[in-house]
Length: 405
Image 1: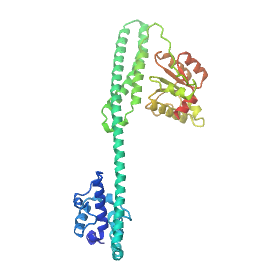
Image 2: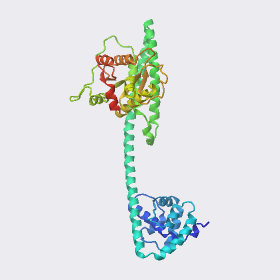
Image 3: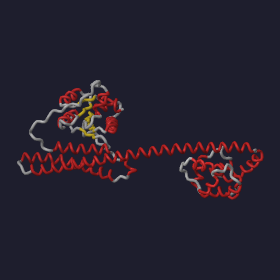
Image 4: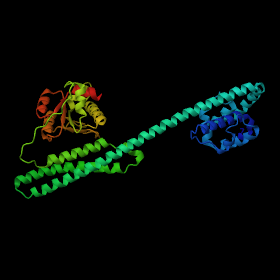
């Protein structure tokens, strides 16, 4: 089998001049594509002299990466068959070059100077086109890097806000524990109340531990990995922790104020999709979703399990789109497959055995502080009437599905 030494430098002149042409365009347009330093003296030479062929060839064979790149962009119009075989190096290329040299020698005798000039011009034009394409790609990469840096800055600010909210939640837990210690010294009725508060605190501590773990993981992420943090879920956990501490604390005997529904801007029809979208993305709103009411309307032909998955998926779409806090309630905690994969951005719960999700939705609205804006998603008219009387807004399941999809 012939080796590289059997191939004369003169036979590779087209490939060597193509390599120098690519390097010249890269240097002229400052594309930042590395090439062997030995090529610099020849960048302005239109045609390599015979004395330079060995030098250029040795430089290319020593830089395997640049030689590989040349093989990717070389074409039959720019490089003769021997040069293409030497640059691309397919299986059996030594033998193929040996056969091509014979054919090339015959063609070289018939070639004239005008043909060589035209080919050289085509090589230069193709090299400039390839270089321009690379320049555009470099510009696009720079733009993408700038966007990633902007996103990292936004995430850093959100992390700082989340840390502050976590401190507030921790302070509220300490206050609740202090109040609990005082009440345990009272009568039997107070002790019974304390037992109920302890159950709420246990749930709260689990949520707080999850929030702290997410916060700690987020603060240790390197700048290049910052996009993997689920801030929506982290902030949702914190909001729920604060809400749980408020609900767990014994309430004073004075009557609570009445909740005021979210106002619909003038010009929007109350049951329209535009009005529904305004409600779903209102700041600080809690959206309670009647799970099976939405799921069975949207995907009536699927099994219950797949209906639940589709329903929670579209809820996650809305939560990510506007940062909305969403709680989906399904009937029956004893349903097979009810407690499957945990969702990151949407809270999912199931009504206790013998209790309807409708009653859970009513109880949720009644238990929340009147200052908290609430939107209930359902087509159940009885539920709509009850939650509206409690000051909540209503979005129909049809409008919710239309917006989420």
